[in-house]
Length: 276
Ligand SMILES: [Fe+2]
Image (cartoon, rainbow, N blue to C red; front, side):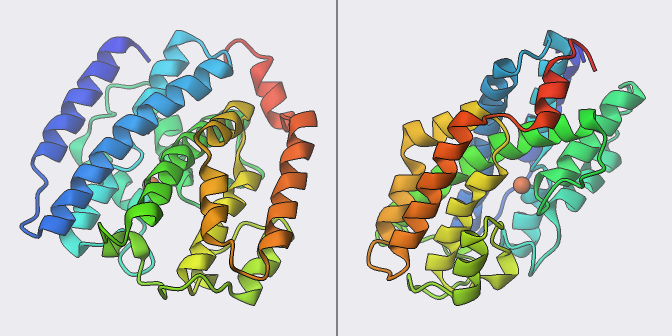
């Protein structure tokens, strides 16, 4: 992808989002939040993609994916006032509808259109299908890491200031307590990502985010998470829960293991090719 397309894409995105507003102040603030999130995800994906040695064209492609990955959030917020896909709709699916309707990808080669669409589709799913093509899986992993990194920023800041600055949309209607649900703890300790449907309390939500470490694909993402102290900040809120020692020990052991085996085989194979 060339730089001109990326500039065109950015202009379209700015124009499209400038037309999405809501009279409700909290929803309007969340529209702003998603806008800032998108630009931060663009920065994150640049750092992560460069750490993987991608060429200039693929870096532009990765940035376009980041720019468009949450484009469905804006109509979701405007229409439903909620981020909750369970109660509204799959925001990746809505994003793809917005993209198809706008025809912004029409001038791109089929490969790039396909990579953008599939990476957006995969960005919010529980996992990327094992049989997915290496190239699609690579870009999907880039967006998943870049997205998680900024969501962790949003969420840790939200939990730290929610008493002074409540945001109901970010709480997803969960019980305002730190008590952990048995099934959620059990999944976490088995290295399974916590399912959104299993969460009952805000404590469970903390475990969901802590559990994301097992779905982080690139070493630099883990380094950045560590640098920002996201895991420690989430753990601090759970310090009074009886399961905290098990949770902390599991995370510690997992992270130590990752330091010695930083890259799964698929990424190494992709990295070794100069072009896809
Ligand atoms: Fe998303």
